[in-house]
Amino acid sequence: MFIPKSLFTGAILLGLAGALSFSASAEAIRIVSPYPTTTLDPMRSAGAGNIETYGLLYSRLLRRNTETGALEAGLAESWEASADGLTYTFKLRDAKFSDGSAITADDVAFSLERVRTDKRSAYPGPLGAVDSVAASDAKTVVVKLKSPFAPFLGNVEIWNMGIVSKKDVEARGEEKAFTEKPLTSGPYVVKEWRANEALTLDPNPNYWRTGYPKSPDSVVLQEVAAADARISMLKAGETDAVRSVPWSQVATMKAEENIDMRLEPSTTIWITLLNHRREPFSNAKARLAAAQAIDNKMLTQAVTQGFATAANTTLPGAVDFHDKSYPGIAYDPVKAKALLEESGMVGKEVKILVAADPAQQQMALLLQAQWQAIGLKPKIETVDGGAWWEAIPKGEYDATPNWWFNETPDPDLAVRWAVCGSCGSHSYYTYYENKKVDELVDAGTREMDPGKRAEIYKEIQAISTGEVAQIPLFYAPNTVAYSKKLKGLKLTPSLQWTLEETTIEK
Image 1 (cartoon, helix red, strand yellow):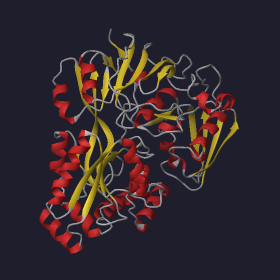
Image 2 (tube, helix red, strand yellow; image 1 turned 60 degrees about the vertical axis):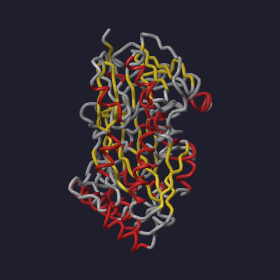
Image 3 (cartoon, rainbow, N blue to C red; image 1 turned 90 degrees about the vertical axis):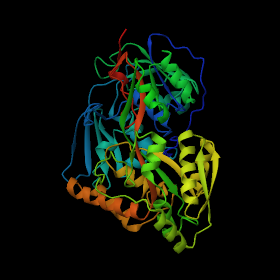
Image 4 (spheres, rainbow, N blue to C red; image 1 turned 45 degrees about the horizontal axis):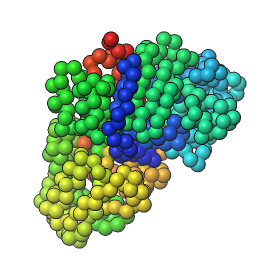
C-alpha cells in the first residue's frame, strides 16, 4: 500500500494533534511523529502512523533482517513451496501471545483471511493471488495460490500481516479486542493509548524472540503535527527521535552536537498525479507538455535542499529492477510549449489540489509557475488531508503533488498501485490505462526468473513514464533525527521502527 493508498490513506495525514503537554517517564524511549495512530487493528488502516505501530504489536510469519533486508524466519520457523509454486507450507515455532496463550495455525489463518477477504480490509492487495489459507494442524499453515506468484513471501512480511488471536477477537469482539488491552504477538504490549495524543507500550514478556526487546524501557509514540515543535522537543531532550524532519532543517540538525540526523534509505517517490479522465490531461500531448515543462532537478534542489534525487521513472529508485539507465523525461520548455499548442489545450485551467503541507505547497507553486510559462492556467486549491482523500479517488482534480512508498523491495505492489489501470487503485486515481502495462504487471508476478522479471519491469517503466502516467519528481530518503544516546534505532524502508533492537545509554 503504499503510503497513500487507502493506500491508504494516511500517507498525507498531517497529524491530528498539535504539540502536547504530555510528559513521558524518563524511563522511556520517546518518538514523535506527525502521523497519528488511529487503530490498533492491523487489518483496518493503511495510515502512516498505524503502519509504524503495527510492527511493534504484531509479529508476522516472516521478518526482514534490519541490517541486510533479507527475509528470515518469524513466527514461521521454516517454510517450503511446492514444485509448481502454488502451495506454501509454513511450520510455526512455539510462540505465545502477550497473555501467555499459544499462537497456533488457526490464528495465522484467521489473521490472513481477515486481510484477504474482509470488506473492511484496508489493503487486501498483497494477498490477491491467494486462493485459500488453512491450518492443517496446530503448527502448520498451508497457503494455496491461484497461480505462481514471485512476490508472495515478501508480501506476507508487510505491515498488515501481523498475527492476532482468533479466540480473543471472537470472544471480545473486534472493537474491544483492539482497543482494550489487545493481545499482541510482537515485541510490545499496550500500556496506555490516548487517541490523537500518545501510545505508550511496554515490552512483551512473552515475545518469541528471547532477549528482545533489548531495552526494558517503555516506548512512547507521541503525535505532534507541527514540525517546529517536534524539533524543539528533540533539542530540549523531551523526546529521543523525530520523524519527518523538514528539508529546510536537515542541515541545521546535522550540526547539532547531541543529535544524529540521518537520511535513511526509503522506497518513497514524489510524483505529480495527473487526471487522465478530463482535459487537459486526458490529452497525451498535453501530459507530455506538462512533464517537459517541469525541471525536476531544479525542483528537487529547491524543495529538498539537494537531499533527495531527481526521479527518472514512475517507480521508486530503491525497488528491485528499477531501471537506472532510463533517461527520464527531459526538461524542454520550448518543446513543451509547442506540444501544448498541438494538443489544443492552451489556456486550459488546471486545478492543482494540494494538502496544507509546506513541501507540497512549495511544489504546487513551482508547478504553477512552469505550467503558466507554456500556456496553461494552473490554479492552486489548498485542502486538508481528509478533503484531499475525498477528492482524489473521485477524480475531482487535475493535478496534485504527492508521494507514496513501496512496502517491499519487490516492485509488484508498486506497479499495481501506481500504473495498473485494472488493479483496483486506477493507477493511483490518475485513471491511466494501458492494456499492455496491465498484462506486463500480471506477467511480472508469474515469472520466477529474476533476469526475465527485470526485463518486464524495465518495459513497464519505459511505457508508463513515456506516456506520462504520472510525472516523476524525486526519490526521497526518510529524514529522521535521533538523540545520540540511542543505540540500534532506525526507521526501515518499510516504515518500521527497530525498537526491539534499541538500547539507551544512561
